[in-house]
Image 1 (tube, helix red, strand yellow):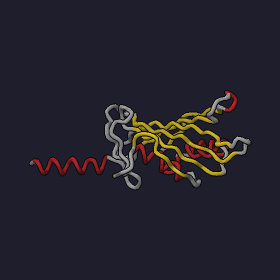
Image 2 (cartoon, rainbow, N blue to C red):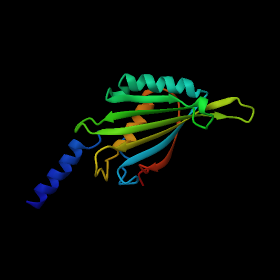
Image 3 (cartoon, rainbow, N blue to C red):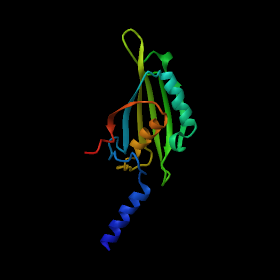
Image 4 (cartoon, rainbow, N blue to C red):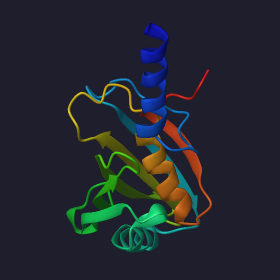
Amino acid sequence: MKKTVALLCVTLVAVWGCQPPDCDRKDCGTCGNACCSLTFHFDGVTSESAYNKITTSLQNGGADERYRYIGGVDMRTYNNTASFILQGVHMTYVHRYNDTLNFVLTDDMKPSIHPLGTTLHAFSISQIAGAYCDDGQNYKNLVRFVKGLNMKYTETTVAGCPKPT
């Protein structure tokens, strides 16, 4: 009986959890709930160009047609380090949970004010209370979305979703 229950639990995680690929970076409560914070650097891309591409992708459903655009703001007139901020939602594949996505774009500048590129600060957090371990879903929400933009990038982990050991 115990083996049957254990097998059932493993099966449910496989069915309800993150659907591969990109599910190898689970988070267990870094933000009080499962979350992932990454930065992506795009060489030779302005923040305005990246903002337009991200906005369009969210409005069109993103890489898997389950992303949704909530809103965005041009921050350049406020004289701070952020150029643009955006928010979206991703609905998971199997169990239809929603995860909140927050994005901040900053232009990377040389002292001589020539743009080097853009950095995207990306954050995903599970909306359901008690999502202690997310089976890698928050990482997948971000990396799958950015891969779908078809822009060359480098990625850095900021918090949560640690690389597998």
